[in-house]
Image (cartoon, rainbow, N blue to C red; front, side, top):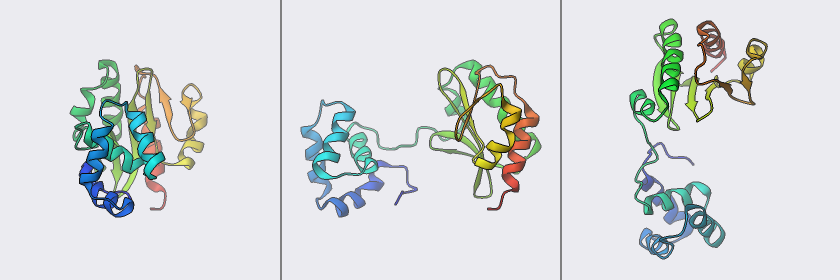
Length: 184
């Protein structure tokens, strides 16, 4: 079961229970793997001890000095990591939505900026080098609005927009409204 605590150590009790050794043992194993690349360390734990990906990742990343999986806590922190053109576009997208729906709550989840209606995600964005992906959190919303997004890169669950996309505020607002109207 996933933990809400983003610290790597939050996985340690489950690792001890599932794999039958104290963390001191696992830290010794990681010491022996020091200098190996991340994929090799993960593969070693999975192949030799039956670790799940999540448990292997928690142990490997902790041994590499990363104590938390949470990279950002604010939109400003997230935006510092993206291109200035993307920053402008992402800000415009969130402003278009929150201006119309000010009661939505902002959250960083999975290290991405998101908007929620109660406990339901209604919009998310993430930046890569070539585009910005937006996520309406609904297959029905994707299907309904696909005809209005023919010029965009529609994937199974996300929509790719150019980094310098002229934000279609009405489209975003309508997508969020449709998502909010879905049963919780």
